[in-house]
Length: 327
Image (cartoon, rainbow, N blue to C red):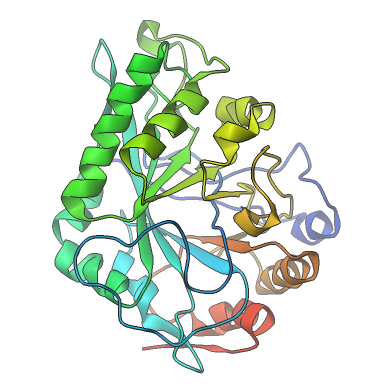
């Protein structure tokens, strides 16, 4: 089992928050292979997010909130996804709107890209009755993050449209099998060129997004804005970007909105918070800027087990005017 830990920015965080762009030295977070990972996001306002509802029980009408959609990545190698559902606001609304399983991998089998899960990710999917369905019953969407695994395969180097469509069919089959609400795309740790794989190209990420949207018309597709795929999307047609639901800044402790044609502020998170590493004061500042600037998403990563309601409340009080409790 490969271990995944994300490490945000520690030292120059306060200075970074004051700046509108991410400095070149900013780092992203660690992957399920033991290296550092990148970004994430959500779209819309309040707890009603995305294009569709997952399989299983229809969610009960939950108390509502007004403000950005909140995202929670969970490193399931270390913590349980179900913990996301234990945080509620004072009025009973969910503190988090989208829970993301971090993470599945894109492997290379010698001829093509294949979707692969480590033991912990697979266990989370297999235990959907306790890890996924209770969240969905509360109205929380559950997505699966997908990123590279140092084998040369990734979201930015599909050599043909057919190759992208083949991988998209693997992803959509997994979403259907486990009753998920969508996927999150992350262009990290692919090590393009390894095992004789091709280098990134401009069309790959667009082919994949279009294929996923065709296969999953009622599901979420989000983008962790990093890597060659980020560069390609920044200059792509708005017809590609508009097929995404969300995109977010990948550099924890910083504030910088993705620039993707076809996505408006309502679909973007300029803020990136690593709950275990970003200072609480920085999280508060990022929440204040998110609200003041009108962004529709607030992305967090690394929600641990146990009660972190004091930290979570620090930003929910800003975003929604309510503290969070842990139940």
